[in-house]
Length: 193
Image 1: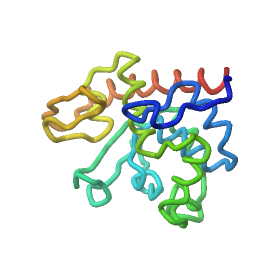
Image 2 (image 1 turned 90 degrees about the horizontal axis):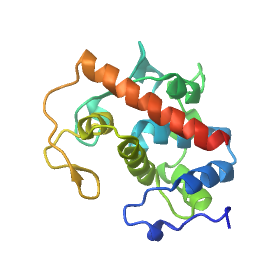
Image 3 (image 1 turned 180 degrees about the vertical axis):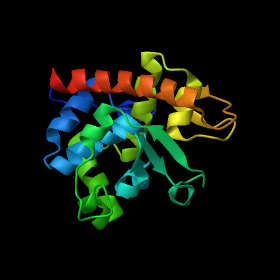
Image 4 (image 1 turned 60 degrees about the vertical axis):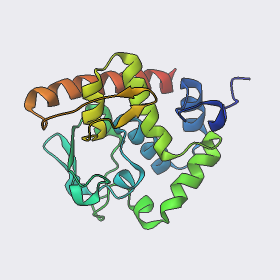
């Protein structure tokens, strides 16, 4: 049945299949939940990084999460693509990009996502982002940079490890933007067909 979503336990690493992405998107009823869902897939951000994303984190075609709000304590910078910008609601009266999500319990969106997706979590969306990028052919170093992994040996998906050295450069931003655009094209095609 094409409306059936595979259970999280059906996949060793928790990634959503393309069919599960489509069905989850369809099952999410609130527009801010749908926007957050797509933004998680487009950016690979961690749950709290996106839930507490601030308007000030977005400037000059870049998304920057300060190290004070990241698990590893290091700032994350990603180029903003047109698709990413399209997911960002305009709420001038709030410091947060998703004011409703920021004001709720941290588990509120997770609960709605689990209901819509048969048990998947925001971290599974992060894994899905990395997995799709890998399937599209993105180099491991680019995936690592986009996810903000900086420690040697950190994993981006089961059995895939990397050694990431050095900080981002303009060349890295251009390469990252290219792969984020490919990811956005894949997701747009998936969700509109």
